[in-house]
Image 1 (tube, helix red, strand yellow):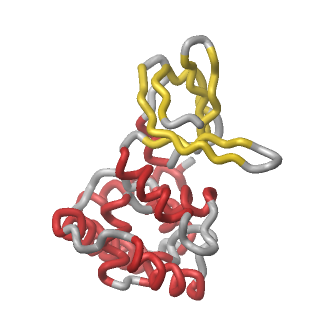
Image 2 (tube, rainbow, N blue to C red; image 1 turned 135 degrees about the vertical axis):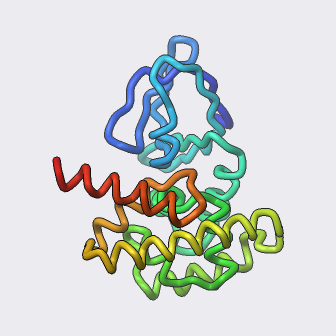
Length: 197
């Protein structure tokens, strides 16, 4: 089993897949959208890895932080959540934001994740409350702040006439900002560039 890899990104494919060369061997790794955006070709990178083995395939899921990998493990241990859905969730929300969503019971926020409807979100909320460490005050407070800002931004973008899919795509690319003003500015810049293109 592969638990971690240190190497150089030699190729980036469609968002979510990279080729990491380690000692002359190339490893295809599936990563979250934020990790994909962070990793630069030719720069040495260390990834925490989940080695997923099935009868018909083996897949490597790479994470730049142990917290993200541990959250991934919690997600795939949840009924009905496979690796692909777990990666989709983590591509939409960082671990801190996810903890904040679960702690506040914000089901609507979970439906922003592609493939997650209201019923799935309700079930996820129940299961994740017992699995995620929502009692960690430092994580929870950070998550609450990010989630509150994200809710404000979604409301503002809706009022400005942007569609649900456009808003979802913009929110998925929010990786570091935690205040609504910065998030809204970044989202508008991305949406404006997309419409102009």
